[in-house]
Length: 152
Image 1: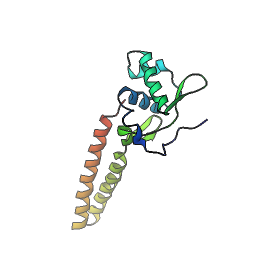
Image 2: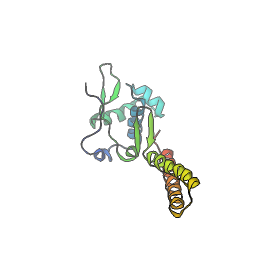
Image 3: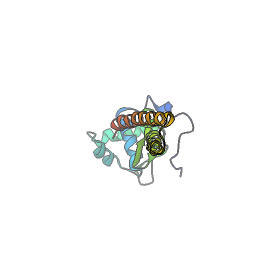
Image 4: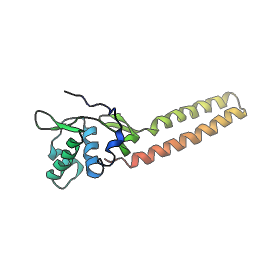
């Protein structure tokens, strides 16, 4: 049985096909990280009927992203990150915008430069403090914006 992994080809090849409710179904399946039935997907996403969920699942099966297990439940066969999903990192239920890594990096530099400023005051430490503050603020703002547009 093949385990879900990254797509070696280009993840953007699904950009046109994987959108709207189909993207929502795929996003939910990645986050759930377990076999799911069509009715469960329909309820969690808020689709009007389970046949609509089946329609989107069939699209995902045709794309080779989802398959059925021996019990007839749907599982992620291949993980790709088209469009909006490429802005996130994580696994299972834990997903975060990629910008959070940069925000944490510059925030740690900012905090370190505050301690440096207490030991000596010169132009370099003040410049480091200013640059790291603005870089940290920008990346936290971008993290917040990307977090607000996640599909589910």
